[in-house]
Length: 301
Image (cartoon, rainbow, N blue to C red; front, side, top):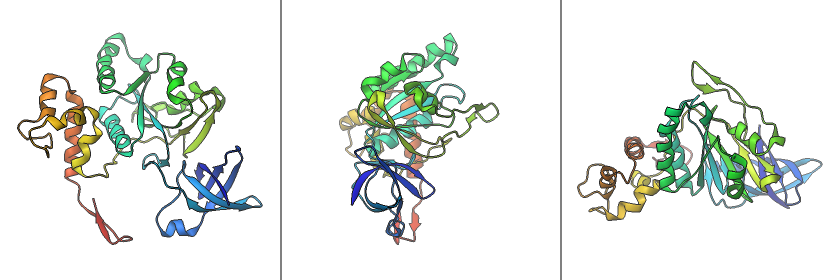
């Protein structure tokens, strides 16, 4: 039996890299489909192979996994966010950050296309950058020395680059590792969306950082809220930091009196825009209806 990490998934095949760098192609045995537990890029797997054809027998326990993009066992995520073309969406950015916080994956915020802002827009956007830095997030912008800024963050890490279609994930990776020569796309002026240039999730070895970095397909929306509404505040670090000071232990930070979070918003220590995201996500999760799972015969939210 051999063991390695899945670095690529395509059309039912899984490429597995072992410690010596050798990559073998495998397929998953039927038991995974029957258990609705399919392998993900990033999984560690036990497999057997002969004459170039291998089969995965078992998957190791995951330390974390993401639904979008579908990947497991990552150390950090570069959230690539365009400030223009496509237009900046704080709602979309905060959705991604909530999903990463819920999965226990460290986010690094990368804002692309800063050079397309005029001086006035750049000055205004600096306030948004300052808000995320104040929360504690690492923030890197495209018009600084990107490779130098990322060097200490990415070294020896397993990294996923994620973000909206056309935001510049492949462009960023080409900057960090020019030898990759990943295809990049253009943004539709009519739709303000990019063309999908990445069609699969692949972990790529980047020797300059001694890191495995995943380039992933982009998306235009992000709808991952698969936890109880009571947990939402835990995934906004600035809300979690003061929620213990609320008058009521079960405070939802929406309508209750004596809410330390709403007081923080009023005083300016918590961003109004971030609180708006929290309030919107709270209402979305609260309004969800249970979905019946025929395979498990259980209800889930």
